Amino acid sequence: MTPGLDTGHMKSRIFYMTDVYLKYIDVTMQQFLNDSVKSEEIGECLAYATRGGKRIRSLIYLHLVEQILSSVGTTPTDLVRACLNDCFLYVELIHSASLVLDDMPHMDNDDLRRGEPSTHAKFGMAKAQLCSFIAIQLAHQQLSGCIIKLYREGYYDQKQFADLQLFLHDHQFEYLGERGLAGGQLLDLYSGSGPSLERYLDMIEMKTSRLFELSFVLPYCLVMANRGLEEGTYNRYKRAGTLFGLIYQLNDDLRDYREDSPKKGSNILDFVDREQAHRMMEDYRKEWWRAIQGDGSSTQCMAETPIIPALLSDLFIRQLRRQE
Image 1: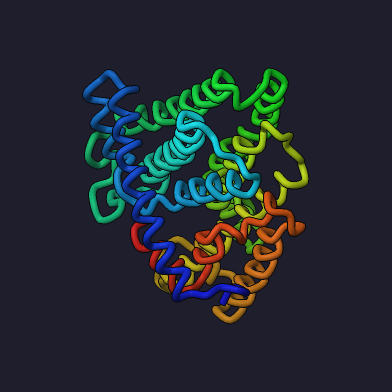
Image 2: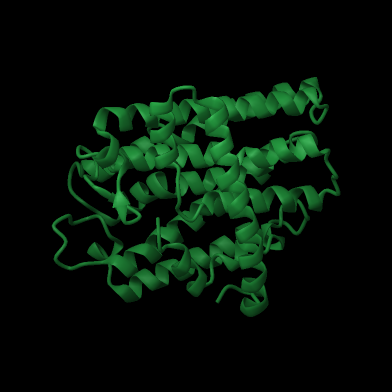
């Protein structure tokens, strides 16, 4: 069990907060697509691609925004709070686009997603691929628009606005490219000199952890840019996301492993036995706990956000993995 976790009380709080946020996420996503997409054809495809799921990355994002605002004693205007919260759309749209592309026949070749036809199986490959590109474009458009609104609302001054843009420019695209989602998928498809444990961990760090990293670092960047961003604190949030993603994927591997799987090198148990895998997860858990504790300052201690430690209890993380 994660240190300091009162699982009974914590889970009841988490389920309540999660239910509230899930309704907000679904309504906001639908409204955003209705306002942003003019083509009924494209809108239908995007609505299908972004439906359902656990929204775990968005939940982490929203809970962290609230915790960081509270930790610095900030009471934002309704418009500022709405802009900060609505940026979960960036994470969710990128994630949805990546799933559409992952399911394609020339990628992971999955005709089902969450028990229903995958996007390309329902709408055809061409439309699904185009919708994934549009989802990525809308994600960047939404994030940029919210940052501009925050500047115009006075949440950032001119220097903070410019510094935030430069900071995001330096870091933002690492989550998508050669060392991000695309690079992870490349390692998944092409084993090069052959599967290895090191290559597999590198692959899941890029393919799974990167969007969790984004869910952790983006709230810090957006909320704290008006007080100055610190590279060390950013890296701590990022490392927490990396470790969360690794634990998340290894937990999934242990649950879903099949010895007769034709695709070798795609599960941690292809490289280590269950006992070793559990030891790896426990090591990651301990490092993750240190990362979310930070140096004890309120803006760095992610452990103060109830959903963050609660997500890592064995029972709860298994429940979260039901519909990915």
